[in-house]
Image 1: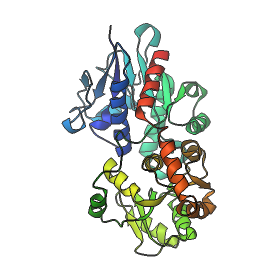
Image 2: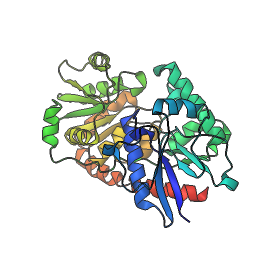
Image 3: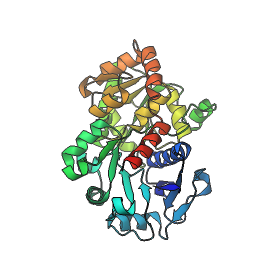
Image 4: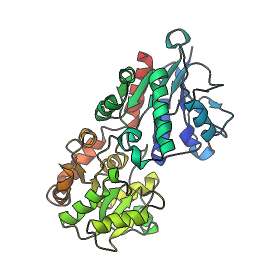
Length: 367
């Protein structure tokens, strides 16, 4: 008898985050590639289904629900999940058909994934409706999920501080990875030109919200003595003027800042490959997507000394407290640059979706 693992792939139909969409696709591809004998992988998706350009090769079927993603999210957050059926269900995000079920007698499992805890760590930076929805969803996760995946032990510890003990007992740590196939494209120079970016710069990521800590990152650039350009990735749409104000307040000269929004994996790799260094300034418990991308393309990294970044980057970064990040950046740009490039490449080998998929299969077997 074939055992089917059905993966919730709503992010491939109507993405709320490029990172979540890439993670969902990368994990689904890896699950297909690593499926044990007698197992296969299918999808659960909202209407109108996965578009052809995002299709995952090897999926055996697609449970296409009658509602679109927005309505699906609303109903699942309330515990209404008709038409799902029984079996093994895995969600690469927190959104899943979390309903009462009997894992032992019905062979029905539900596993979800948390990538950040912003609704608890920085609720003032999010819309109130988003905070309430995230907290309500975590309550359902605690009641009905059979396991909860987080990408780092540091995040698991942080989750233990904000969640009930019943949920904490369900936590498993399975790391993320760069988007599958992330590498420096052959047309990197052309992509940089199309994005109207200089040929070398220091790279940052985030927006103007305080927890992204761009103030510390810009201050570090100034303190390090770097006199070239600065590129900021993942700037939310419309937030560019606020980011420019933060840069100016930190002492960055006008004309040196280049703010860009969310880029696809090839543009990100092209941009990061031309960075003299990457500054990881955010100390939240989030999975550090851009820092892991920087590892993958071998960029020297200067990072604030925070638990998640320590765990993920290990010795492949120059660490310092937020108020001394300039010293770390100076080392990453100077005496430690070559060493950090080599260590970044070595550290990147520890993050692969194939290894994560193996652990997901093992988790479902354990349950």
